[in-house]
Image 1 (cartoon, rainbow, N blue to C red):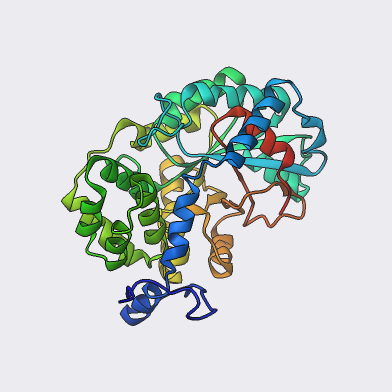
Image 2: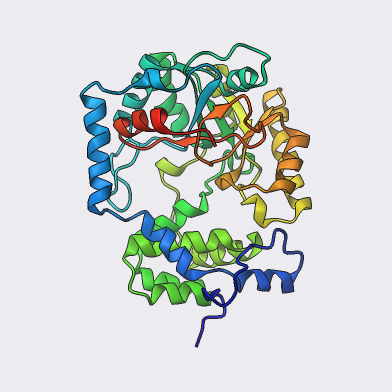
Length: 374
């Protein structure tokens, strides 16, 4: 029997996602159109390590460590890069043993950027793109999403040593709480409990089906997260809350959020602070009236707490659509996505691309040279 939550490839050509499910019936129709095979394929992508992958990594490393990085070939006049990070941690490996951005790797990033490029605040980069100010050659802006405590205690000292500025996007509803970003929370839950048991406890037929496919723990966790990201926000929260109640996991230091006192300290140190919504929903999974509440609440809270109205915004999960972008334009001057690429003077200021900073500095160097403007 076909799973009710799985869109069967070949059963129809239209696999588009309804933009704003308005009621229970619309939400259920939305759930029924998720292509589970595509979800699994995306999840497998995080764990693929074929010979092509390793050859590419080797070429990038050789180019960097042999001093062949041709920085002069890219980021010329009128072109700039925005890098995005989330957090930096002390340990060099993640929950699944994968390399993560630890303090040593991040210091390599910052030293390289300070040496080869011209780091600027995101607002300065935006002003340059608009023509309101001169855009430095090889301009690059560092941005951090969510608002983790390690941005103050691990990131800030490294940036200060190299004189590099940065912009941090704050999720206001999580400031000063012991809350989790739900994707990281599920990662911890899956790593501590039998994955198939976690899937059963979700009560969701598609997740239960995923748990029966014999996927490795890391791929299974990633597939569940990818699936949840495609659900309407209410439906996703219901499942996450169910798992949270069944498998409580206290937030750890690597995932703890800033307090308002710490946010103000970052502002005092010269960090630029932008908005990242109140509760970090995927905005394309919300009704537009709720999107507007998220934007307005975040902007107003930051203004109340810091005395400055934020002009910059980062889309949670990088997701937007024309209707959401139009709403963002009512509240902010510029916004960044997770769409990969370089910025130019023709870039849409409310949908600026960013480059996700990879762990090895050799790959960062390669991406800055060979990424193309969208």
